[in-house]
Length: 64
Image 1 (cartoon, rainbow, N blue to C red):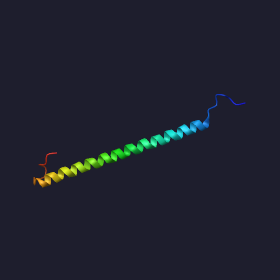
Image 2: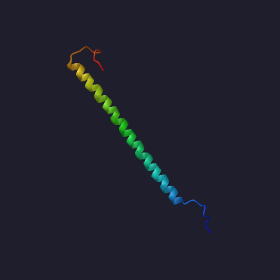
Image 3: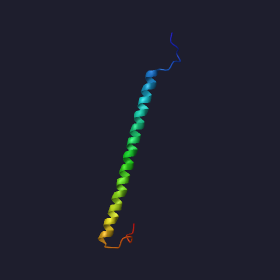
């Protein structure tokens, strides 16, 4: 006779797999957003340097 309080292991394993996949997706999205943010910062810095060069100012006089 089976004990009614025994855990259903298939459900526990399925939930663990689902949680692991969800954690993977969240981490992937966060890493992708941080990478995109870093690229945006680099592009804005390059854009500001280009503006300073066009105005023919001395280095260090560019307003950021």
